[in-house]
Image (tube, rainbow over all chains, first blue to last red; front, side, top):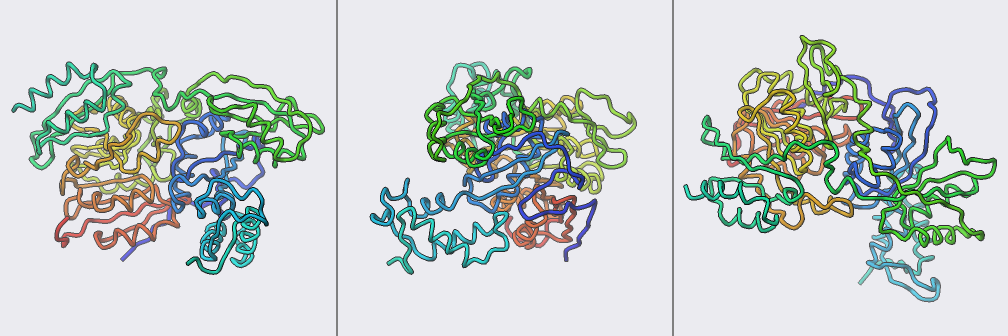
Length: 171
Length: 397
């Protein structure tokens, strides 16, 4: 039997947009910081350290928060983080999964796309790959309400522009 | 025993050995009763002393080594925090700022910052501060970034070398005394306690996690506060600054062991134990190897573990010896190490798990509920703590 004890207030949690304070009054922004950080592996060292430390943000809290929220991604996946630092040293941040091109390259095991997309095929992937990537992307902010089909179409488009051919099944 | 003589010899000659040689010699010479951490790479970077302590009260606790560094001031930064970097101030038309930021990141920048108050802001332009690791060819990266967004003009930017500073220290200057619950405070080393009568945990977290401000730490402190009656043996799995182990002792526990995969955490915990007048007779700390630490090393760190990922935690912490096992880490390590965490606890012992988000609780429940009874979940903000007692009916643990 599980007993649930609720203590203290919970923050309004807008999908992947995370708040470090409970205020809803608009706060003065000091800076917007963008970083790439490997999932689950944020440390208070570069790039996190100098970028956030400069605005006296709580480095440890960010690392713990970021690492906890990126547990569902494969370790070391490069996540795009955008941090809004407020003048009172608090912060919010949003986390996005890597770009579709990154996922496609990884799935195909290639370093770069084709030099002549449309004419020379760099490699081939299956619909299953597309579906898996679409599922991951669906957890990104701003894509939460998009149907999987739309996201998949967009991924196929990107693949084509990279010279990656999508087939129904790989033999 | 011959091994004791070997160890005595070791303390005199430690400084001369390279660390890999050291660890191999230790492992080859160890007897089954001795438990040793194999991740000793950090020793080459600090002055150190290895002491051994044989607790006489309980035969089940294996003999442990307490590895501690000489007292170091804040200038003795380990390598991973003092990687040099360069800061570049880039002028950019306001309309292109977002696209350029993305491009800069793609082409080698560690971070890209847009400061609201930049003095160089004009009507059309904005300044972006970009940080690069020192080995990066900045001119090439910036030129690629500008090319990729179709920018025709020559990019304008200034490179500044930034003084290395302890940015963690800087961010912790705002660390204030925290009242976790009535009569329980966590007080930074440089402050005076607000209420001298209360239980005050004095802390200087340094480079480790655990100031008492985070919801997960508070949840664990509250759990310990509620369940410790006096005389218990505690295991703090992922001790960080040592805050939970220290708190448990202040609440009346008899003995606490703190383990962590991060050498800086062990160092910090050791200092905090001293700040709270807790000696080796009540608290011991152990650096352990982690299978996943290789992925944490990445580009920044040069310490901790590389290559020798043997999991010796089983021999380090023993089986069925602790009355309370508390682990405030992350979801994945909690799932991966579940067997070990559970096996460290006596039947009927309290197990507390945190560092997890509310949405992750069901994963923990799925993994741990076969082994726990009377499970409770407490929450604060987005964070949760799952606790229960180890079932007495388990066969082999």
